[in-house]
Image: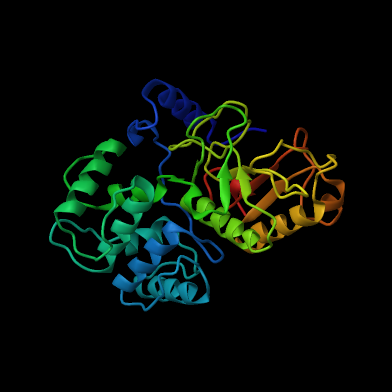
Length: 323
């Protein structure tokens, strides 16, 4: 299957191998304003909500793109003369992401601080005041991204920051990290993908069936990943099926055919994943014939021992990830 972003993915892979995890994002020219819409979750949604408040709307900054956020987006689109569809693409981001710099105050600065904390571990107080610590964190990110280091957060810095991937948070006690293919630092994904996975894992934790083992997702700036034909766009996540002893994080890896495979619990996992990202789960590859018959998963070769979650967006540069 031809991929529309194959060229930049190969460039990203080579750059990652040459320069390592902290390499500048300037090597990754695929950076774009990510499409965000109803059903999305995560850091980018929090930033969006702060920016909507900056624009005069009143939205809870809960990281869930629900009806209130949709209404606020439509209000801004109407006021700015944009297409009124409730979908936040480049034009709407451009209208919302106002330029901020040292001395700025307000909700737009909160959006910036929240992004820097989640994607670069800046450790900032999200207080809406652009002081010395925020200035330093911005300059550090600009250097990391290979863009002009001036401390001013304009369209280029916003685009690179919103696009930048986020590391899965394993400190919540609901997931465990696995690296079956030996890919170090391969638990990055888009902010929406990570937020949706974390929400699904949190929901599944409530069933009492143990933690969710998470395998490879992607590298910090995307690109080809050894052992995988996809996982280049930050929207693919591998997780493992659930065992009858709930020891999937510590005991041996299983397939759907294993005697210790818990179909009922794995079904609950799939349902939790789908419910956490309504309208944004493209498919889940996993070869359990019963779950396939129920319309919960899709058959694909070599997916007996893991579930491959593919999230999607309303508009994406690679059509494989269009909802």
